[in-house]
Amino acid sequence: MRILVVPQEFKGSLTAAEAAETIARGLQRAAAEASITIEVDLLPFADGGPGTASTIANALGGRSVGVRAAGPLGVPVDAEYALIEGAPGGDGLLAVIDCAAACGLVLIPAPDRDPFAASSAGVGTLVLDAIARGARRIVLGVGGTATNDGGAGLAQTLGVRLLDAAGHALPAGAIHLTRLTRIERGTPLPAIDLRIAVDVRNPLLGFEGATAVYGAQKGVRDWQAPALEAALARWAERLRADLGLDVASMAGAGAGGGLACGLLAAVPGARIEPGAALVAEVVGLRARIEAADLVITGEGTLDAQTAYGKAVAHVAAVAVEVGRPCLAVAGQIEARSASIADAEAATPDRATREATRHDPAPTVEAAAERLLTRWLER
Image (cartoon, rainbow, N blue to C red; front, side, top):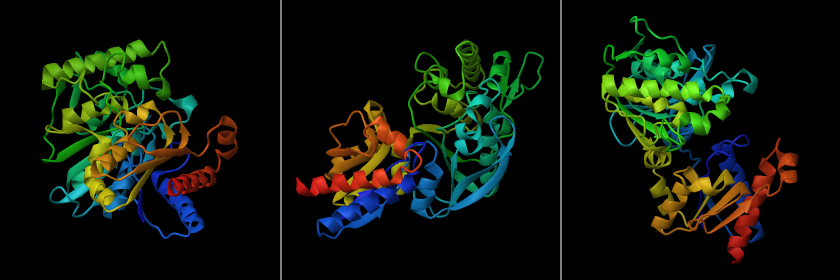
């Protein structure tokens, strides 16, 4: 029996690679107990959030590149992205960048988060470095950011001029967008194919927009939200008036605090794509599923949100299309879609979660063992 193990990260507990290896150990234990031989194929997965670069690089044999860039509050950070030679889908060097490497939420302790001041400028530095190294195809995952600046900071780094009424360049930080009067594109970048992988489909503005839905986790307080919404509305207004970009209600434009909007401003022809489908295409997910007898995916929490374009939902959907059963291991299970034939929770109750939060691997491994044992006994 050949089993494809294709989980995304268990947020805050295990990376996708760690989750895949942990699940595989549990499967081997179950197989040994059942006296059968299994072949396990590991494919850590991502959907545009943190880990997208490493997922694609691991699958295609890329190398890591280190860059010193401005962090979300301007303090320099050591960021990394991936470069891949000979990647399918086009010619030349492919760069895969996680925005969170330069402006991630994890880079700022919770008490220090400042959504008015946080900037995506450092992401632009990673893009420029990739271009300088010869990359003409770039995949950029926008999830997990500490910023709510609509990508304005990175747009400025890439040469877009954001000007106030006096013709002065705006400083970094979302709140300054309220003074935005004119946008001008600077010297064009070399022609690049830029694909923006989003892990959510929220628009930039409104009740389902970047500030309303994700602002709190970035440190947005109730009294700050109206000002940030107004700043992003001004940004969207000028993008439409000056560059002809209508981003206000565009699906996915609210991902990463609106970061995709800055990329669309700086790179004509850039496009927003659902991250799970994009990553699946790049790493050859369908072919790996076709080569397997059973697919096992996983994530931290299996719930109603899983169905909204997330990695696990995409894996399960492709498995159904190919005609392979798909099972899931999760930290917690609140809901399970019909495309997942069976699922097992590693930490079904709060007491177990608290007891294992510093070392979650053993419970995930045990859940994988229980899941395969039950499947084999069905």
